[in-house]
Image (cartoon, rainbow, N blue to C red; front, top):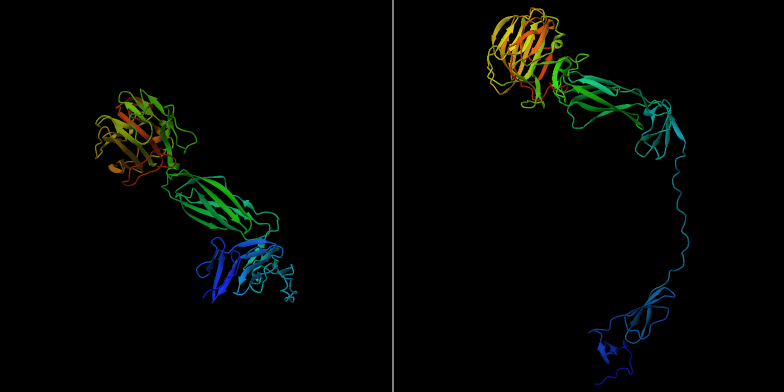
Length: 465
């Protein structure tokens, strides 16, 4: 059966027949089943309807801000609105209930802070403590003090700029801060560098800090900062702690070589350094050293030193003394060669003669060292004495001991020779010279060693003994 489609159709026109909708494709001149495929929809924006629309096309009408779609129901086709312009504003709704009243801004007054309420407070409430006249505000969790911009927190007693510290002792640093508004003050501290281990403990009580130190530290100084706060303001004070080894206060003589190769005493126990006098060809040397950059060389033929005033403080025959140094024998040690000669100034008596192999006390031989030193090797040599007991240590091991032998004259009445000894008065007729090197010679007014010990591992100094 033949069916008649509309005459003179336009592109996109539709025609429904027996439940099937056809769309006209003017390019191909045919009606096409829309179930197989239709021409793509178009979107047009204008104030007038587009010409020759097809089903599914969209038109945004700009003059009324509305969107339309071209719709075909099989018997008719037309533009159908799918959105329209904003409608008129609706009537105003009913007024909501009033909110709770805010705080009135006035402050409640309480006897003291402990009396402040911890519940039923509103954020922004103010309160005044009558005892301190301080103002607080509730932040929803706690009462926060409000600074009134009055007089600032200040130090009544301030820590010193510098403290000289013997690390064997404790040090108390006294501070006191004042708060004009009478708030309680909390004290604290910090240490710089934070890696420092020189301070082993700090306790604080009412602004007084008690410090304990590591007596073996080699650190020369530490920065200690004291702090005080009243909860709003914080004040600080930096103090430099200049550290010294516990034995440093007992070092009365320490020989060093300066940059000009002069021999100098760098001890600080006396008001002025002791004089060191060179004889012969005695000279500073860099050929052999232990821990310093320079040592002192004696050629074994008229070379020696004198440092008589180093013994001035030893006025009692039982006074404790330590003489120690690093020594280096160029030749194999032998009897009759002396590293240290303490001879009575009045007649040259051998009050104390310390040789490479033997010891003389009060002009009498007291025997030999139990260990013989070797040539071309550094040794730590330490002689200690107190109340008749004499000991010598080599590299920390005891090699000589004599008891019940007090000096028959004070050491302050003796000359002090190094690398020699003297046979007549006032340091006359020196002899028995040593060929070798010496470094870090020092004298202490205590018995530094009482048992075997580990030899020093660095040059003697204010910070290391």
